[in-house]
Amino acid sequence: MTPMPDGYTPWPEEFVDRYWAAGHWRGTTLDSLLRGWALRFGPRTALVHGDNRITYATLNRRADRMAAGFRLRGLRRGQRVVVQLPNVPEFVTTVFALMRAGVVPVLCPVTHRAAELSHIVRVSQATGYVGPSTYRGFDHTAMAADIAAEGPFLRRVFPLEAPGAASPYGGFTTDPSGCHYFPLASLDSPPEQPLVQRADQVAFLLLADGAAGEPVLVPRTHNDYASQARAAAELVSLTEDDVYLAALPAASHFALGCPGILGTLSAGGTVVLAEDPGPDACLPVIERERVTVTSVLPAVAESWLDALREGRPLYTSDAADDLLCLCISGIPAPLPRRARARLRLRPAVRRSRRRRQRHPRRPGRPGRPGRPGRPHSRRRSRRCSCRCCPTSLPSPVQPPPASQWGRRSGQSRPVEGCFEQDQKSSVSGP
Image (cartoon, rainbow, N blue to C red):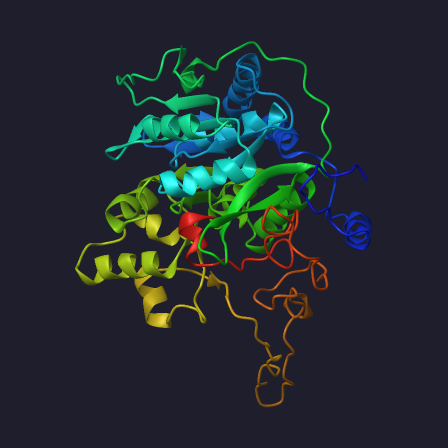
């Protein structure tokens, strides 16, 4: 096993052996998986954002060229770069491109401001920042410039310019603190020879809420996150005909890999990116793109239900039968039957629990006269160590102590593939 970089706690050897023996870990990096998906699903639509549609082949090609652009602008293997983008195709492309360049993305919600971002830059020692130039009236590039002037780490900023807009910091400039600014759209260089990387290394850093109120960093390896996304996709039976709506922030753990963006892409499906989870933005998209799977928080689901109570129809066509699965985090029970009927969900509502509690096995189904009762399937009787969801993965024992980065490498929850997710950190973190 390759030694982890300083500051990261590696997976215990017994877990590594178990996951390799069971086939959960397959030794493939996430950026290499994208190459395989491009070969397998090349002409199929991978990402949808408004009227913009991107195929698997185009996504892989853009990631290749952007990775070469990052390296040409001075980023090197092992460095960290904060990615603070909304739900736009550039988020997915940037994350894959950074991993392909050997750089570790630090996924940060676009709602974080200078206090949180400066803490993240200082703790991760991030040398780069990728974010919108301005987003919903807030100047993210100016915020990055202030952080760069305060510390020695941040030295490269890649702003995403809005169409037809220009930033005073963009266009290959350098400010008095020595920070360089390169428009994200300029990162388009001929692809280089792929780097040789190990799947047991850190792929990216997610954010979680710390005990002191400051965000902590959660390292995830290529092996464990690929396994989780694949297991989550299998749990909800995703296929290449499914369409996933990313309504929550793409930088959150729930929207990224439970099954999220990566789980949908691994199955050959289509990811629809929505920047606003509100009903006015999402419900028309669900109808237009014929969405079959999505992940939301209880407050978002309630807002959708409120829209229905106010008389705004969810569907105006036969697309009502397409929404098959709604993943909801942070609620102690499934939505009521009446609510499911209003949302016209079939056949089930996936849920997660935040508290550790026992789930007693239910008795067998009552049999009809002259017919014995049928026991419940054993496939769903095995639960992970957090006891929050059905899973076929082994349940590790208590994880080792957290590292200086916040939590132990490769696990933000007790077991990979788990749907458990903190309600607050789904908005401001993983």
